Image (spheres, one colour):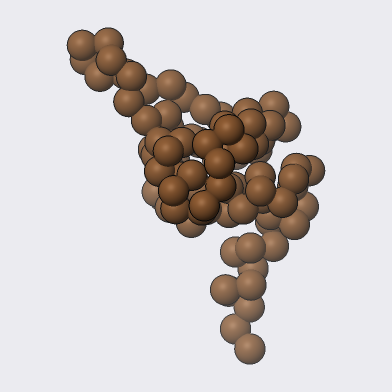
Length: 89
């Protein structure tokens, strides 16, 4: 059996967070680019994973506090907000 499909999910088992946080981290890892960065809105994460926006927001901040991700607020040139960028560590 090829362990590659299983191995990419093993890291989430070691995260000190709720199961929803593990799911969000695994999702971000899946969509991240080669630099470990993913730019996506909380609403989009909520819709894709069928998790409440509040739960997504709380878990993202918990992941950041625990050092698993860095959240970079992103802005348009005119100063308006756009989706955050999440950098996996």
